[in-house]
Image (cartoon, rainbow, N blue to C red; front, top):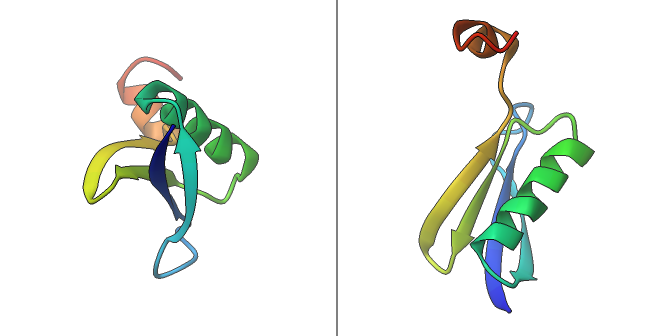
Length: 72
């Protein structure tokens, strides 16, 4: 298990909140980030760090972006 920091971006707040979680690997961390996003509709994005390195971001697809991509 490796420690990850999850930054929870809520557009209503100036700074993101964060949570420290241990995950098996990046795939497990990505699944956790997606679950956080699904559980909290106010979040726009979850950014995941491994130590001081940004690993990835999981965000919502806005309806206008989906339309441009042919998904809406």
